[in-house]
Image (cartoon, rainbow, N blue to C red):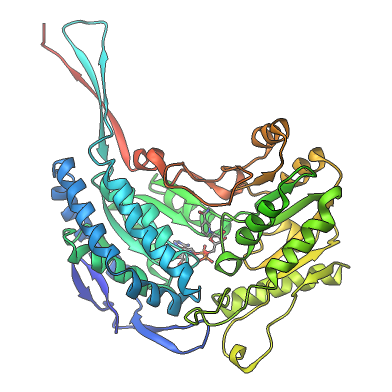
Length: 477
Ligand code: NAD
């Protein structure tokens, strides 16, 4: 049985309760884990608070070295961690390897900032004084993570937090705790001091983290409704919050686009991770002149995505993560079809005995979807792509922005002026121009509108795990 990790100790829930983690491809139990609650969060927060006193005072270059060593050790375990991730999440082993590697790389990337980010010296009018702006870590930070990219999204929070000298109480999604535990275990084995990152498990620990008075900042990745609840709760203690929430990213393809490049990017953007991506291609707007040619290419690509158990080497798309998630996407597809949409590819479940026990679904492409259909107005968190023909860029930008979300967006065009307009006018935290929808460590990433606020990745994320303090030194003249 897996355990939580609190101050380095492998621990069960105070209540003694447990629950099962199941494989989305087979329904089999992968492991049994503690169902933690407020008492466990309290222990973890106390441990993180105690450790903060030493971790935050460590010279920054030593923190950098410790984190590099720990990340290297973790990277030596990518294969076993990736296997666990596929078993609990469903994604293909190739996707899991990429994600497990990204965890270690992210820790190393932020480790390099530990001793590189400075405060300022400020001259004051009274020359017998001078001012300083110093950057300090915040304290104990809560990290709350969803199930779609358990490791990437944990690293996005843990890496900048601990590099800046904070300590963390980390809560993975209740259905994907095992690979996260393995990563933190590996960091500790690799020299990360016990208590710097504490992992609590179970549904009830999320709210307890937001409510705990010792936890000073909350970083949540999750759905927009969860973000609103967390922000309201955090407001009671005026905690800092970073909210990475839902999205419905538009992609615009114009007549002058590189269609092969666009088809590849759209296919990866919509079908990678079985479509369960926040940054993604969730609504596709294609100019009339290239519509038919692009559909042909997209259908050809979708037909190569063989669904299957993520551990099988010929699988190109794993199952959806849960029965509820699949039911939601199927209901969105049905809503579109009931309103008159045409299915260009997929639309159902793959047939065969090997698919009976898992939450499999076909990669799906739909067109002629009327306005008001759920696929246009809601986030589609699965491998179903709604497509619409557009006359020109104006229409693409208008439709692209017709959403409460503002996470990512992309455009494919050979015309610099069109690209520039899209960059200026699309309401989103990211715009990719003729590029794969991939979030880079170097670039700040975060949404606008109801996709949340605050940044992960980049120096900006590091800064959000620090507080500025002004200091006046007198008596120098
Ligand atoms: P979710 O909102 O249901 O859960 C996310 C996490 O929050 C889980 O760990 C959950 O246990 C916890 N949680 C739920 N209610 C809580 C509460 N009241 N207080 C504290 N914690 C609580 O999301 P999900 O279904 O796990 O993930 C899918 C959603 O996440 C999608 O909307 C997706 O777009 C979004 N997402 C966003 C990003 C991004 O970076 N913007 C990245 C990945 C996923």
